[in-house]
Structure formats: structure tokens, C-alpha cells
Length: 253
Image 1 (cartoon, helix red, strand yellow):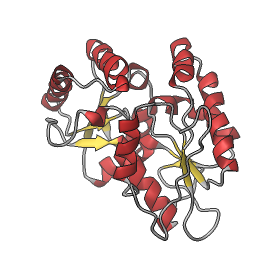
Image 2 (spheres, one colour):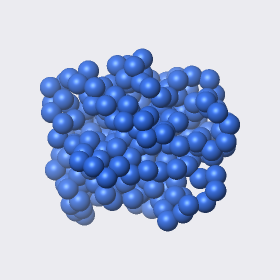
Image 3 (cartoon, helix red, strand yellow):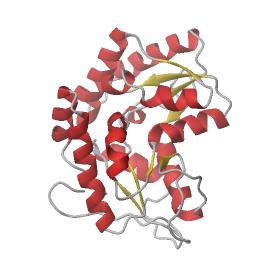
């Protein structure tokens, strides 16, 4: 797992510098390729906006987080999906492109909701601050989405599952963190894939279990723990499981 400084990514995000974001992602990708990865995942939804710059130069294929979520939404029969996440993500086409490709409708938060959700994520959750008021606000937004025809909601940020889930959401949740983790595990263990370089499933380069390494600029240890547990990897070293490596050096976890 390679985890660059969040500050470096945020600097690029604030400038709208998606090529700069791509360079940071590619730096991680190249390091992880040298560590023995077979494919890559990034549990940060926001920076998927840079994939147009990343994919042509990437040394390895990726699982696309929004592609995984859209596939799950279609599988479960949902028709209209609410999107939550950072302002950068919600303003983007990361989820709309993948959802509409599967014939699914979507709804974004309104402008005021986008600002407040972004504030909660960046000023509170990223720092491990969890407040009842934040939960109540997410519930309010999701309830409005439900009233306006949504039948599920994407938790489109690594930190949102720290406070929202199926037990307290007015809508069924599509937890992008957990769904990506499980898709990566299936990809690594089963070796069954579709054609395409960046998709919800990617073709194997060899038979047998594969190594999936993670690049992620979001820094919360809780969020990383959520992802590892979701994949069923915590504390396990079973034959056939994906190999997770940690690089103990500056700028990595």
C-alpha cells in the first residue's frame, strides 16, 4: 500500500490540476509495480477524475471504483442512485459516466448540500472527528434523495462509511470502499475478468492468485482498516488470498 501525502493531492485539487493529480498517482503506480503488484486499486473516489491522464501511462491495470459500484447497483436492481462525496467528486462525471453506461439514473446533492458534505469530510472525518450533527446532516440529504426518487445512495468517499451505513441511512447504501475491496479480492483470487484495462474487472496477466496493491491519498487509518476488513483480509494469511504489502518508508504506509 502506497499512501502519498494528502496535502500534495489537495494542493492539486484546489488548483484544478488533474494532470498534477495524475503524476502523483503514476508515481505510486510505478512504485507498486516494482513491488510486485499485478493490478492496482485506489479507494479514493475523488482522484478518479484524473484517470484519463493515468490510464495511458500506467504500468499496470486498475479496478475503477465507480465501475465496481455501478456494477453492484445494476446487479441489485437499483434504478436511481444518489451520489455523496467531496465537492470535487460530486461536481465531476466520475459516477454519472459509469452509472449511465449501465442505464441507471442518478442525483447529485444541491449546491448547499455539496458544500456542507465537503466540509464534514475535509474538516472533520479526515481528522477522525465524528459528530452526531454530521450523521444527522447526511441522513437529511439522503432522505431528500429518497423523497425525490432515489432507491440507493453511493457512499462516494473513503471516510463516509465511518458514520453512515445501512443501519442509519434512509436509503440502501453502496459503500464504494467495501465494494472495491471485495472486487479486488475476487479479482486477485478467482482470476476471472472482462477485457479492458481500467474497468470493474480486468484481465489477468497470469494464472493463479494475484497481488493487488493500493494507492490512496486519504490518510485516515480508520478508513484503511474498514477497507481491509471489508475484503476479509485483516489478520489472515491464507493460501490464495491477495498479497498486501506495506512499504515502511517516508510517504508510505
